Image (tube, rainbow, N blue to C red):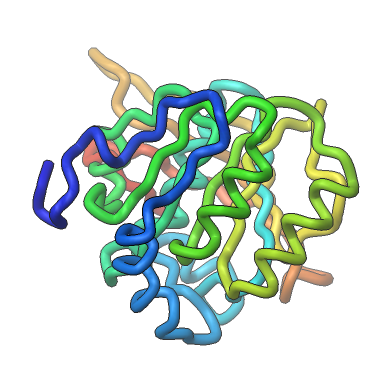
Length: 229
């Protein structure tokens, strides 16, 4: 894939060491990130479930789900509308990102950077990438210390990026987030094949006080997209 001037391999940084973005790559990303708006847009169905139909710049969002219960798909679906509008994003700590499924969700792969195996340098990798992206998904490899979370969240606030932390209930994000998408149940609807996965998602945080409730979302549906049930 070379539509943006970078080969498919350049989307990935496979070194276990802290990746370093080249000066020309950072320069090519910067014009997008400097075009600030207060929020980054969300696509369906999230735009109907989140206040202002978007993610506030400088905020941290948590997606919490048991392993294999759709947490990664949910987190990636939060990128789709912004990606379609030209914003850059990054995914850190996901060994097998499943690029076909990501494309089906509507994410523009020409504007995504992947760091699949940062290991112990995951927080540093995120901090480096914040200079060049608008949204960043991270799956920490283990329980996150308060200090590491605080430093990263401060950096996110300073840069006006949106951080999406993908966690499990056994190792939750240690500090309050602006929004939390908690997958409480997941199952596949089947006929002669696996057709669609239904997620029950509880959304809490900004604008949800007194009205937080669970929503059933199909993710992926037969087209690989997210939709309200």
